[in-house]
Amino acid sequence: MALAGRLRANLSLVQNIFRAESFYAQRSGSPSLATNELLRNYSTASGSKEIKIKVPLTLFGGTGNYASALYLSAVKANALDKVETEILDLVEATKKSPSFSQFIKDLSVPGETRVKAVNDISSAAKFSDVTKNFLAILAENGRLRHIDSIAKRFLDLTMAHKKEVKAVVTTVIPLPPEEEKELKETLQDIIGQGKTVKLEQKINPSILGGLVVEFDQKVLDMSIKTRAMQMERFLREPINFDSL
Image (cartoon, rainbow, N blue to C red; front, side):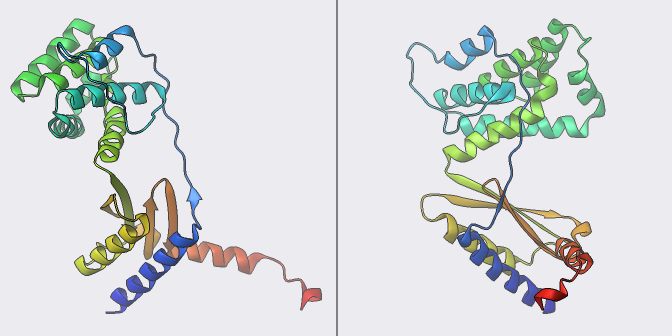
């Protein structure tokens, strides 16, 4: 009950602070990789009839270019959901297979060998032509080692396409269902109609308690660890008796 009470108090703070826009902006860079003619041909290929499509977000850097090309091809093929699932499945597979992970990072492997390997994997997994051709391009260009970063940026595009906003909440223990629902409703109220909040929970005992909410490239840290550090800094500051 005490935990639930603290979480409810935190949720109230979330709402008030979000609306006051008291956030710390966070930006992350992206690796710079050259985009070649093969990639441009891939993204513009759409059969006999060209379809004019724009990416919902402007991404920069090599991983952004590859993710954008994959998005355009998937939309033109009306296979966005399927391609998203296939790419995420592949990324998950690389995390579970050290040998495959090492293979895609080894630039000493000839390009034709990498292409044959991903083609065999795509066929066995019954991947769509969009995904199969994209992986072949990555393999040929030696970019398979960036598949995790590309997948994350591709997911940013698919979420923007679906008008979804990702919010990550970090706590010491999983949020009870009712508290998770309340937090999601609070965030939904903040972003307004037209977009949907997708809430992701992360567990991190090092924050000691409270919660940290990352939302729309911003972060609200209400963890006990951060509050304790702030209090420690305050107590270490010299007291100006003249102002008393």
